[in-house]
Length: 52
Image (cartoon, rainbow, N blue to C red; front, side, top):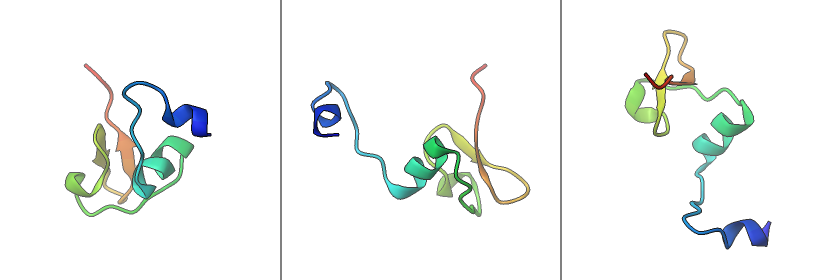
């Protein structure tokens, strides 16, 4: 794990971002409560916004 931190441009993820990467379901209120690149769906779950 320490070697991963040495990667150039690596970023430490907060808990919400970690859950999203692992496929966890995090409750959200609006898009601002989701990590970058994610949006809040009608069920209150942060989902990845597909690139166009």
